[in-house]
Image (cartoon, rainbow, N blue to C red; front, side, top):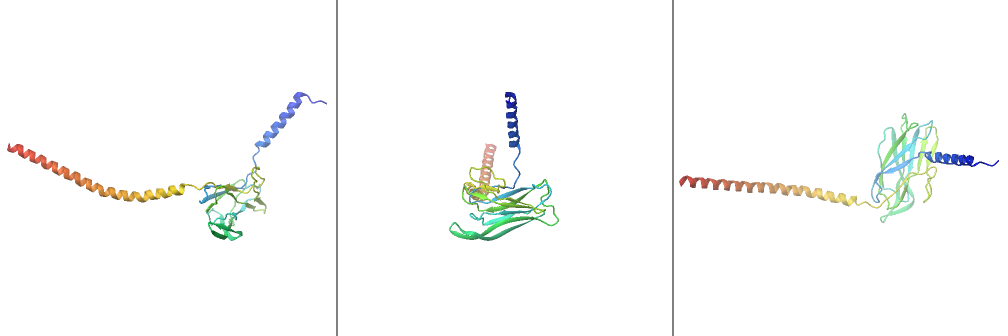
Amino acid sequence: MKTTLPARALVVGAAACTATVLAAVPAAAHVHAVPDATAAGGYSVVTFRVPNESDTAATTSIEVALPTDHPFSYVATKPVAGWTAVVTEGALPAPVEDDGVTVTQAPLTITWTADPGTPGIAVGQFEEFEANVGPLPGEGTRIVLPTVQTYADGEVSSWTEVAEEGAGEPQSPAPEFTTTAASADEHGAATEHVEEAQEPAAAVEGSDADPLARGLAGGALVLGLAALVIVLLRRQRS
């Protein structure tokens, strides 16, 4: 039977509505890495935002793999109540040259583990874990931080897939960010420190100048009074 125009329009409209609904469905939440700074050569506090995607079990462990091609020389974690953080150092897969220095060892992983008797990240909740890392490598470097999330029932979510250039986001993307140009803030901060160092000297000079000015003003006042007295005496004599 031949489809009529109205029926065909209904079919097209239904397909369009279905596509719209599918497009409106949000992608599954995953672990994000949010840096507070990305300037090359600087340090950044990276916040790992970890949602619990299980309907039945709490998240009890988060392990983040750190870069080995551009390793960090400094990694420190911020305490989180109910969690223990461990930074593991070890040998790099291959030596890395950094400003003429051959680096063979570096921090390799950060692992946050829920303390015994604590709830971890409960169903329907998320947690944030912070790490101060650096120095950051050169401008335009992708810092990929593959993360493994473990649940109390043994389930594991591996956020380790690296998105290819120009491609869409993979199903289980690894947290990442990209470095930017070196910031001039360091020079600005140095200038501010210089100005602050100069201010006390200026204050001292001002404090030396104030007594002198007061002395000159006082002397002028005395001379003025003396002149006035002389004038009055002359008038009385006359």
